[in-house]
Image 1 (cartoon, helix red, strand yellow):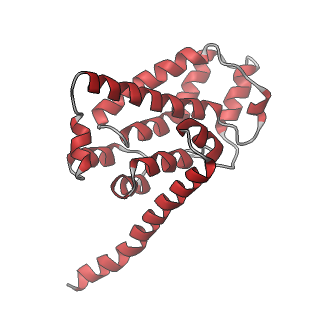
Image 2 (cartoon, rainbow, N blue to C red):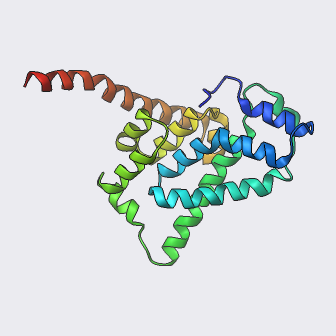
Image 3 (cartoon, rainbow, N blue to C red):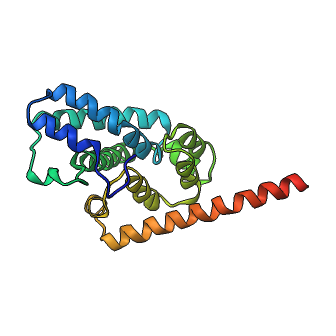
Length: 202
């Protein structure tokens, strides 16, 4: 993942596609390799692994259709520009909302939501399948869904303004949720060595 504020490989792909150096399909494959891990992590932080994998196909189908007619504005020249990542983040939220509405219309309560509510099987499946590493596994247990949305987007390199626009929040709220999530993770990580040492003494 590329930290926010640093140049993203996405810009190079956009430039080559805009200049005709690569085809739409070739550049789509490059973008898939670059961002599929982030898309998968976003979805698996909200639903079970099997559901996330199904929804991931929907997200990339939407993007594939849009990529054929993608516009290349001057703003993409900024070092930190990640318009594709931002589009994928928004699409994840739209796809998740559609999935939830369909379940509600059928009168179903998703089992993964019930399981994750008390920290049981659903959360464990999300943790096992997530690709963002130890921080994501801890975030799944310690952070609220709203904090996880912001944390994962930040870890993927999205700037606060893009996250705020996507989630309908102010930038200050985004920053507050990110700080809260990081504080929870730091507290847990700092406490682990002491507990492990105590366990060995016992």
